Image (cartoon, rainbow, N blue to C red):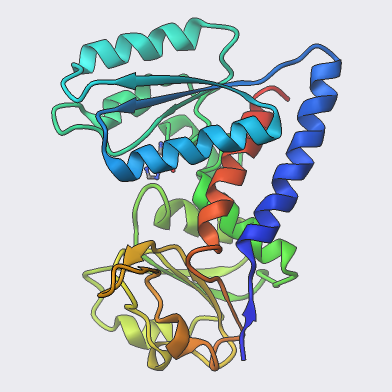
Length: 278
Ligand code: GUN
């Protein structure tokens, strides 16, 4: 039977640690401010942005919220970011993705100063991660590492298999696990023998965006299963990319959805905001 990795509890622990450090900094006269930009009103983005602002309130980080209409031009958005880059009061800038189709996401990401890029998406921060230098880490993979470490799960020497190769999760996840001395395999939609490979994983990170995609036949007995997916099942209930009930007896440890990786992403965003002023 699997150990349930409680992301809600661990993220709370991290937010409490951050709250203490933020208060100490405030006493010394240093404040932290995160600017959150949302373009349009995608309902999922509105929920995520709301949760990020709530976490700021909890930890004592100031948040400035900019809500722009769907028809905002790329140039308008870029000049707002440019102003924030120059504004010494703003320490972190987050542009909620996805953006409307007429705006080039890469251009937006590259306009954010790498020193304020608390999402860790700027090519400078991506490059720093892959060459082992200091920089902002992408929040979800950073959160997965914290979940493993704070659950005393050894990463060194383990075979970690990641399903998915996105810039936000799969690729930075691979780099971070490599940094922890794991042997890393990435599988994706073009992989020929995907399920043969997932069965070899000591630690399986699933970020493929398909509800209940991973079944017990796809995992090794005792494997650690990290489920990054957030989907709706046939009854509109939240579920991950892993069939939780099916794999539960066979897995060694598993993150639930909700309450696993999700809350960690926001906690690590707060950590990046803190690191922005250190
Ligand atoms: N959309 C989905 N996940 C993220 C994230 O981590 N950061 C931003 N900015 N947008 C997202």
